[in-house]
Image (cartoon, rainbow, N blue to C red; front, side, top):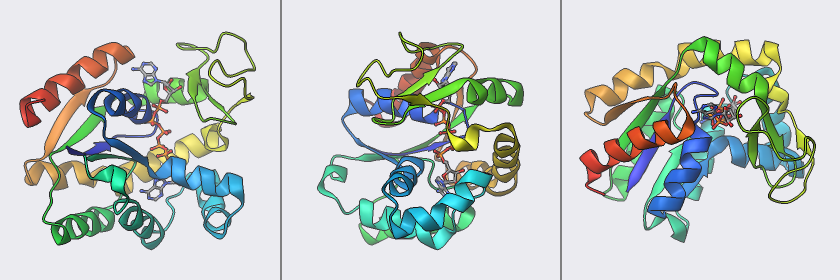
Length: 218
Ligand code: AP5
């Protein structure tokens, strides 16, 4: 199964991706996670990406397209994969199509998570992440048992630098300008599944399972 998860910042893509990966045993590829890890390790990629990410801007297309082309060659993608946060521009979507067609493959579905702006701001301002293992929490809906420590590994719980109010506003603007056109792009290719994503995590996941079952029969 080959999927793309599309949606504004804070729509719950990463949260749903973890559940999908566990059930369907496909690789979860998050460009945001790959870039944040590069920033944490201080690699050349990380140093280049950090200034864009902190402001809420997109990292240049050629950088992320290169990351995905390389990542799709790994053996864990043979069973299938789910791209979380990629593509984010029409140029990235076209590059993905051409990468897949080289392999005689195509996407099975693009899940588009739909959430209103007020809820996005509430989710992102409440999000906290583990600085060690990356586990995601939310101080309003899903807090860790101890306020400053990760339940999974005990690591320090922090706020993402791009969840500051100014960066959230910028990310929403960038989403509307550069990523939202992908809804029409994939609709016209017959790949789009709209997922109502305002409700609790389990309810949203129910819609995901329904969409995948209808589309890929699993
Ligand atoms: P990325 O990490 O991809 O960020 P994003 O798309 O802005 O998405 P988020 O991670 O903020 O949100 P999400 O939808 O995954 O929501 P989550 O599940 O965490 O990208 C970061 C940056 O990297 C970009 O700004 C850009 O600079 C760069 N980048 C990445 N990919 C790129 C690309 N392809 N091209 C160029 N640049 C790229 O949930 C959010 C919160 O809500 C959590 O606290 C969670 O617990 C909570 N929550 C989730 N679901 C629910 C629910 N149903 N009800 C209540 N709370 C919920």
